[in-house]
Image (cartoon, rainbow, N blue to C red; front, side, top):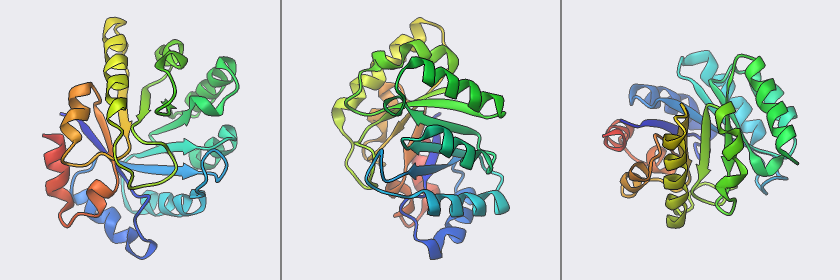
Amino acid sequence: MVEISTSVLTVEREKIMQTIYDLEVAKTDYFHIDVMDGKFVTAFTSNIMEEYSGYMKSVSTLPLDVHLMVEDVRKYVDIYLNYEPNIITFHIEAVKDEEEAIELIDYIKSNNCKVGIALNPATDIKKVLDLLDKVHMVLVMTVVPGEGGQPLMEDTLSKISELKKYIDENNLDIDIEADGGIKLDNVQSVKDAGANIIVSGTGIVKQDDFGSVIAAMKD
């Protein structure tokens, strides 16, 4: 069974507290925090994501799955470590070289936090293969990052399959998370490709019954 990380990116401020409660009751496995800086992507969400993270830590015990879509990775790592996330994921495209990536990985781990590495749809998986034995998760973007509600890009499924094959062949203990445009009508193809953590935002929070959608996605 896969795990579900529900993105709260599109949740309205006046509904966030009720949504946090409803998602916990619905048995989401993680709250997915989409942090954007207005530079790496055009949208800026960090202020509201900090606000939501604070609410979550005050009323819920569910783990935070922080996804940094930012240029200055270290700055935002330091900000979100304050909310004691389960994992912080940063983009391979945001670092200048592998050495910088390893420094960030080691820094996040030294703060008792798991670490993930993300890659955009246009990025070859070869960019992250040498890092996979150092991280806990690889996140495959199934849309171009920066905006919620986009349709899943079908050609990214082969990237997930390729990663899954590499991970299995090299006996790596690492999760594959898929993020972007995943809904009940296409989640099976993402699971079949090899992802074991599914990020869904509008596919869950815009539905009437969170619990039935999450249960169906896990099934």
